[in-house]
Image (cartoon, rainbow, N blue to C red; front, side, top):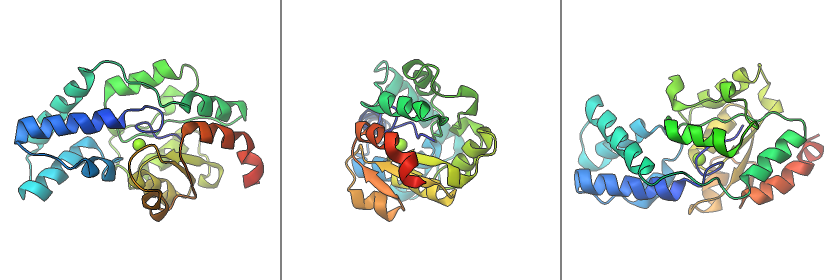
Length: 221
Ligand code: MG
């Protein structure tokens, strides 16, 4: 089960830049970039509400949150297509070559990004098994997105599934669902943040993951 942002798509630098632009232009606020990475995995609406609560000391009405989310998606989209994460295509192909299925489990509800997955990884994921924020389930770090992925894949036992994550909240979600979690640290956080979240192993690129997948089933047996 693959997370999307920072795992399948090299999207986190753009997300961070666009959050920075939106909060600066719309709120006159310089958001610390660490907030973006520490909260990765949360739904964008939860993220917006939590930042306004923390730094502005008020509860944002739903309409304000929704409007900010729409503007942020438009800012991301205005910059064109999103590049796949280097090595991720090789990693997903390695998974399929091992006879395993591949499922996308993301907290994102960003339609254009979800469509990029279909373009960048043609035929490799069961698109009707995809779990996203639009499915109306509790977001990471709750286990619900990964439990939904297991259900969508036909009722797989958590012990038979592997989660690939780049963010601490996503690692927590995968562990809470009972899965083995491989963290791939593609961002600026220290490895310790991923280990503390419960990662079973921390890698540093999707190429490294592709190599590992080729021997993983033997090492887990
Ligand atoms: Mg991620």
